[in-house]
Amino acid sequence: QVQLMESGGGLVQAGGSLRLSCAVSGRFLELIDMGWRRQAPGKEREAVALITPDDTSNYTDSVKGRFTIWRDSASNTMYLQMNSVKPEDTAVYYCYARDYALRINTYWGQGTQVTVSA
Image (cartoon, rainbow, N blue to C red; front, top):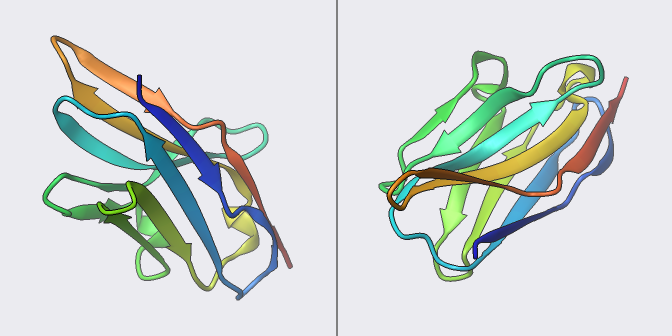
């Protein structure tokens, strides 16, 4: 059974930095991708960044050049470095992973709050 757990959220001033971590326990059969999504109050959950097994990454336009996603296979942890944060980055951030085992399975972390003050 795959489980994901985020950490690293908190309160940060605009222009500052924050690093989120997503620790993975369990084993994927055939990993499709991993990434981060966020949900601000009153809004739908949106994609932030994703990374594929060959470490190709993609970002939503609003975070390009500011956020970086990467994986550490040795520790089975995924990270999201958030630089030059803005108040509009305030949201609950969720890490997820998708793998294929007869069907596509999506695993979610519990979420971590990021609040950016102006």
